Image (tube, rainbow, N blue to C red; front, side, top):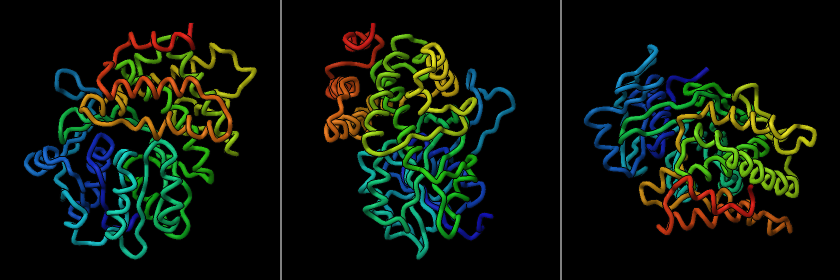
Length: 351
């Protein structure tokens, strides 16, 4: 059961943070704090409220009787402005700034409070070791969202959180369960590696091409590239002593290790499984693409770049991931723009 007296925080109010804050407001009201440095988002929330739409939108209207949540949570620009100890705080900021975000929010925790990290990649594992397992709780997001404009959010794909089992209090996982269902695992590392295999392919290629996930997975060359990227992730994971875990909640339970290592699984079946992921998240736009559109640095060094770095340490070749990093760096520098034609830059890897 969730303790009604919990004080909860959300750091960052991008696509995930906005949906999370909107859903948590129903339960926690004025005991929910948002920390956001984006003054435009903050101003919209203070003046008009934070709006979360769950369902398809056509010509500005929500179809199918889906819900619209409007919330007016407390929003501040700095953790120093929070005047109550936080029992659970969910950090949704990008990997580039995650270390600093955790460092600055830790002093705001109550005596038994926890910081929940939901980012893609493996950085959460590093920060758990750095700041302490008693303070850091890790989960993986298996649903999708977008920010249509500042303070306005839409759930683009439903799904659960995959979260580690807590020792002692279940406050963190109970709070997550107020947002979407939570599937607990004894091997969060294996889950994070499986999610990384998906993110390193679809999220990165979504940035390269400018295509949403649904359109992305209709392209045969993308399917071929995705498998090659994922195979490199799988190879590096095994060299690291990690066994990938199946991801819960997606259609039919996508078994990522089987997808990447199944020697007897026909190629057309593997492609069909990737298309299922794309269909589920068909309207979701790559978070990396969103960063490029706003002129921000992407998380590429923490995703495909991490695979390249680990591959070097284990003498494992990762040429496709390396090429992805090179192309995304060109996008960051403005030498390229996201475009399907950028697939030609992978011609040495796909037919």
